[in-house]
Length: 303
Image (cartoon, rainbow, N blue to C red; front, side, top):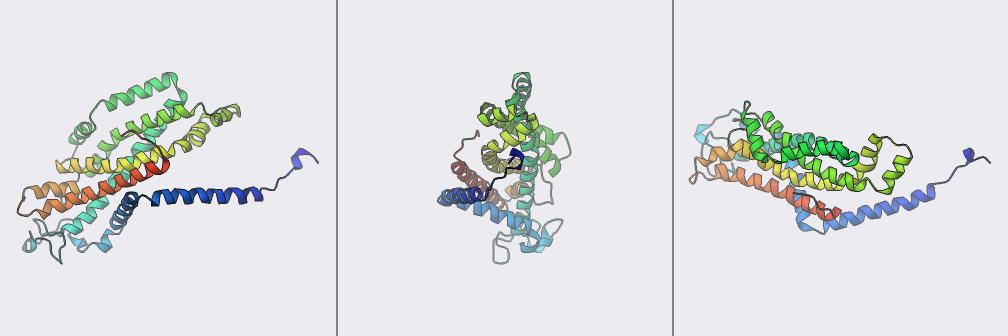
């Protein structure tokens, strides 16, 4: 029998590997489930995400999100009809908070969706290539890191007409830097591993090594950092909206709602307190979930 005609029965191996993989997933699940704070964080994030997705169907008064006024019901304190009260235009604050969550999560998705791939790609290239490529990429990264993040976002947002889109671009323009540094360190440490050297000896392309060998082994720290960063993105976006450089009225940005309510403190406290508490809950949920993932994967990420 020639070598070309040899065949192997891998069904037994599949029966061995599959239970082992299931056991690994089960142990990971048990480790995560045994951390109550992490589970609470996951529940908070999932609940808020579902509420944001189905906001038009679950919000008590979805017609009051935009340019709506009902001055006869303005400044109503929390009640059964309006659990969070109403604002200066008579709009239901609970409804606007739910739709505000939609904007906050959209901001997180766009900023991390733009910043993470760019930073990871640059970091992987710098860490694997080394030499002058590493020097150039990391010096550019250090230049951006030398600027205070919020100050750079303020500068970009104030240079254009303040909109949600500009706020997204302003935040995303600086968010790639931390991922570039993290991915560079991970790639540099993994480049000497045996499986990378074996791929090089086998003639694998650099693209294959970067995205099939290095990237999968960097995903755990990157996922943990992205989860922790989601809360910081929410705070940064709310800060821009608070000073008038983010979401513009009548759109229900959480930071904008807090800013609008400050002029009515302390009498009509609910106008700013409930949107501020909504920001706190979302940020806390992301942080607790991120801490749980960090303990689950047993990784340390730079904050």
